[in-house]
Amino acid sequence: MSAPVTVLATPVASIGEHPLLILLLQLAFLMLLALVLGRLATYFKLPAVAGELAAGVLVGPSVLKPLVPSFSAWLLPQQPEQVHLLDAVGQLGVLLLVGVTGSEMNIGLVRKRGIIAGKVGITGLVIPLGLGVATGFLLPHSFVPAGTSQTTFAMFLGVATGVSAIPVIAKTLLDMKLLHRDIGQLILAACVVDDVAGWFLLSVVSAMATAGLTAGVVTTSIVWPVVVVLFAAVIGRPVVGGALRLAGRSESPAPTIATVVVLVMFSSAATQAVHLESIFGAFVCGVLIATSKGWDPRKLEPLRVVVLAFLAPLFFATAGLRMDLTALARPVVLVAALVVLVVAVIGKFVGAFLGAWLSRMNRWEALALGAGMNSRGVVEVIVAMTGLRLHVLDTKTYTIIVLVAIVTSLMAPPILRFAMTRVEESAQAKLLGRAAGPDAELPSPAAGGGVPAQGLDTVGAADQRGD
Image (cartoon, rainbow, N blue to C red; front, side, top):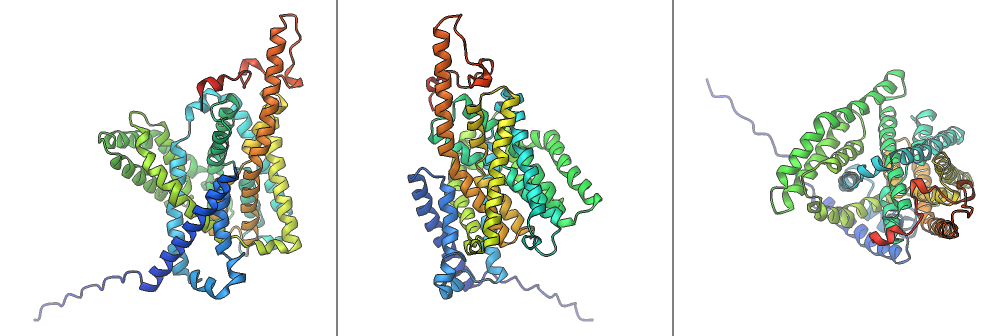
């Protein structure tokens, strides 16, 4: 008998020469434009994300395709394999961005400002969420992609209008020298509460979108995130803390960076495996990193620089590629965009005002909170990209949501500047009233005097702490 012949498996071919060339040129074009336009935006005191999104808009169907269709078709071929290559790089960028953002969350700040931050954060999420869901039901069915129920679409729109963007507002507060002021810290704390609930809801709605809207799916979609959070708190937290301390024994930051990347990837894969969004896993891992003790967070700075300087701008540029501003030329789409924008803005400001009123804060502090929480920026773009990938959004609705993210981020600085001027005037009036003697009448909270017991910017104590 002859010996059996062993057939060796043929190795999978590597990426082709032309697809690799196209990918490299796509990355180069998008990064160059994102760098230039992002710097230009910051020069004019605008969020860099606005310029980075504009880079994708210029290369995408809004500008390049109508002007030079042949070059656009060559640079951005619509073959799924080629599109997926660029998407994979962007997906890696957004997972690390969310992980790094989560690792920088000040959970102690939320504990310190717990009651006020909880009130403002919850009302600032629930009211725009409810208004967004109602708007989703009222929009014409032509805005709902085929195969998606109006309920799922409405819930997703509600989540998109309810979230806030910590990275954008943190940068805005830093630029305005408000990051270490009491009101700035309270804005960040409320945004943390808002974002934690927002990522949870995004994971739930995404699971419903992929598995269908049934009672069993709804129950499972709510239970799984709770299981993930409990698992992370009981088992994940000591594992993450131990891994970071072990990596931190090296003087080089390389082991710590590699450990964080591995932890974020495994966490993202875990939530993806149970049909939750991978972004939710990255965020949970980031929070675990933020709450870990005994390691040096400064060793993450090189990773932060790479993510913020390269991967994040590239992700936003790819997000801009999906925007089609020519759709706004249609009156029904333009009207829908204006309606969603107005609903999103009103919802955030009303929610923040309600939370501030419940906390006995004055109207100018409430206005500052609303301005900060109204900034959607990075987070809403991520939500919109998720909706587009899950086919909950089409190009029209995706463009509308990203447009809301850009406009609300641009609104934040001038409104915040106006509100803080009034807050400081109110504080000065209160100090003058105190200097006048014990018989002087102090302004009441209802009149805009603030609440000394809660210590919101009654004096310039932050100026002593510095920026």
